[in-house]
Image (cartoon, rainbow, N blue to C red):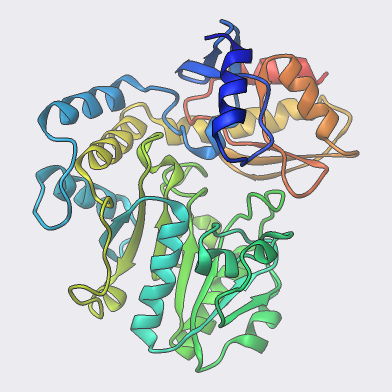
Length: 386
């Protein structure tokens, strides 16, 4: 089918979601995708931070194919070797205090269950989240989102959600009390324009949580699985080496196969009883094969080390672009701030067959490339910007 035929069919039969780029992606390899018209695009957006290992990484494809030939799915009502191995691998690369994993299907579902587990653990209801934070579009998650108009889209909102100012510990102290179940945040606020906070802020959050017996949740749907150059933001130097009680994951976790997870410490895990949580598709065999292979591919190909080098290289090259004011973020989660609205730049790059992302900050262009992106591919971006 040509592009016009594909476009017409989607517009006719699919409910509206995003404003789409005028391309139909048919195949992909590494950091490149090919359209229905046979045109190749450099993908520095990674399907919105999903394709961490690159498009159709051979190790991940092989693992999915082999598992599909055995059994596509059975639920958590049975034990599964592939699930057991994926859980062990994921917990094994997590911060030391993390001991168990709960698998689900998406980032918003991971955040919903994280808040539910925090309420189980504390027998409280209030959840503190932050201005600029985005946690998903399902009921509890969108109620925890204080970015733009998203919360209004979710009305009537789930009660018990309050908003602190990201990076401002005093605003957290004013809200934190013995009624608070959890403090949840994106450690780097991606959609807000790749907004960051200091290590001192995260250390302060840990102290507040310890003082009031509050569960600290890091929404690492975007920062997790190697994107910052660390496996996780939690427990890294970026967080001042403090560890969250719950880490939520999705996006990069399955290289494109839908899967989410909550990683929890013993204090949280020990309060969860049989039937407190449930999921039909979470932990399915095909998804678990993708998780295990994704972690193996990132490790074997030294992608975390690569994205750290790429960040340094990109920051240096961007000094050549006069309109660039600042570069925000870490590793493969970067926001390039321009002196003016970046929408024309985003469009210009697309015309040059380079896919990037925008944000709620009109001056910030987001890069969420596969972790295997090469310096030569960064050079193509710079050449298009000059």
